[in-house]
Image 1 (cartoon, rainbow, N blue to C red):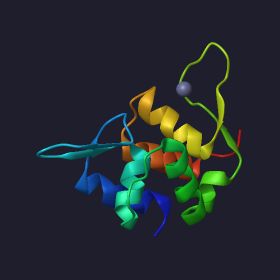
Image 2: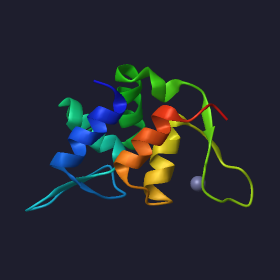
Image 3: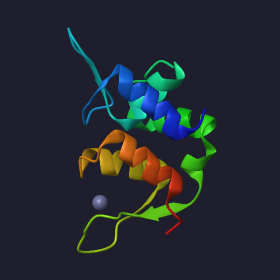
Image 4: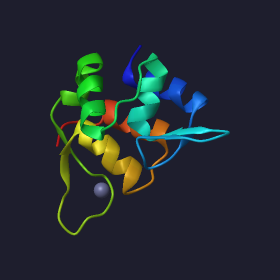
Length: 109
Ligand SMILES: [Zn+2]
């Protein structure tokens, strides 16, 4: 399973949010990292840093160079793919699946 497929599966089981993990009465909400972890059937850790660490072991693409944020910034925003996933999810509220596709396909900045 690749990163996009993991996020796709996670999106079917959770609703989107800017937090790593929110357990509600009706819906569990996760950011893109949480969706990927749910998608591969792993427990969600307590911190975003740990989530990125876990996901980098499963999906090496998340460590593959840095990306320039495709959204407007007064100064270019350059982040690792794992951090860019969080940035697009939280700062720009990108759809989780769109973010996963971008993170997987974009050329290094
Ligand atoms: Zn940005």
